[in-house]
Length: 340
Ligand code: WQD
Image (cartoon, rainbow, N blue to C red; front, top):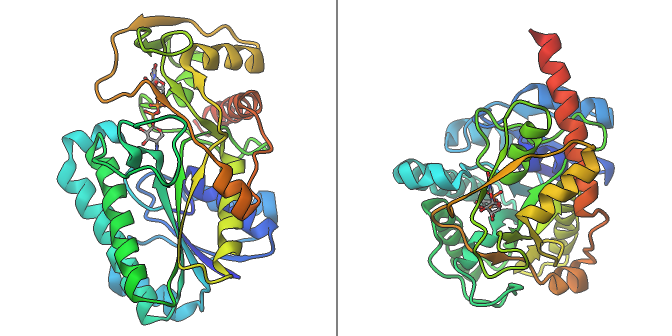
């Protein structure tokens, strides 16, 4: 298949591009570099030997996006591009709704113009809001999310459900990610956010390399195994594999389908710190702090549907992800030192 990947130079996007190429697919990348670097294209080539046609444009720019569809007869689109910081979305709601919703609408319109019928959307466990039960099932209600970022995922799912009702040729997979972590085993691809990381694993990684002093554990009075927050941490390479399997599913013309992509297991903050220490051989100091507003106690997936319908299972453990993530962090720190 020829697959257009928006946000293809980002953390999850770049790992998915590698998996698609390894699967024998052709890939076209669209990315505006808002949360990624153009050099990731070269790293994808270093891993796969393939240089993907890459367009540094904003998906909202219909004229520019149309040129890409004119130049490439694509069979499917995987849509990662979008703002994704929960905290930031709470202080910049208009920017989040404008960017995430309009980019998706423009993309769907151009796809319709060029009769591209297969669409994989990067959704999120955040659509379950404060979950009524854990593990979460795809049949559980989609409720008001706990942030404007999450609401954009809820709204885009609604747009896609309504569109799939009227366009019978439209095949769409809503993939609800839990907590993606880890990195490619080469040490060339991984998550390295600018500034102070919001998410737990990039923060732990910077404590491990000495860039940050200690981990702030946001609350230890939750109703969980050790009082700290529990999440379903999935290796990003397993997550990427899930996208390839979802594309295969769309070849059967299923219409709109929904899948949780997680491990089905929960890991607490303290358990994660311990795993990272084992994987890296580095002591990770931490301090208990107040709960973070908007956090929930537990979130982890029931992944039976992805297993049964996509053949999706995880190859990697949390420990593997910590090991790969630390390897990437060390390699990236070395690259940054050499670049200075
Ligand atoms: C995980 C746990 C925190 C940082 C985020 C996005 C969500 C989705 C997945 C895209 C929680 C605790 C964190 C820290 C801590 N992404 N924590 N100290 O909030 O589960 O979800 O990633 O769809 O949209 O919000 O991930 O890594 O921020 O937090 O104690 O410095 O770690 O309280 O229990 P989260 P996270």
